[in-house]
Image 1 (cartoon, rainbow, N blue to C red):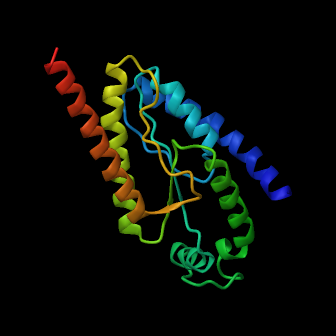
Image 2 (image 1 turned 90 degrees about the vertical axis):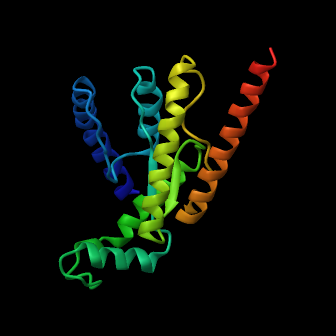
Length: 193
């Protein structure tokens, strides 16, 4: 499709510049949050794997709205006109193309268990889920670097198309409980030696 080809070309141009910007932040040892529709899941995961060897954590997350009418409402809020009339809202005018791109991003993300995909049904819950996931990744990153960087520091996520913020929180808490259980088991083994 013409829209997807143009989108992928534009994304490649954006990430070329983005790579330079990220390198600058790394040199200055400054944290950065990078967000935007041009961040393909393959790019984010490659960055996570590559930069982990330099002790730089990257936490990839895809936030989407699966419900079309809710997505359209979001664009009414985002635009200055507060309307879903296509002639007064550029996002609604190009809604089909935006949904096409969003569906492409979601389908690319399906192939990875290391990319959290959140269905943004509730902003507060989604932000909390991302926050908890970020903290879980950073906790795991510390262990990852101390162990010589083998495996991955990104918690495994559901391979389903997307999960709600509430489900993401449950998964993160379950993952943390499992991690604590594994840590206690290792301590018990070490104590018995």
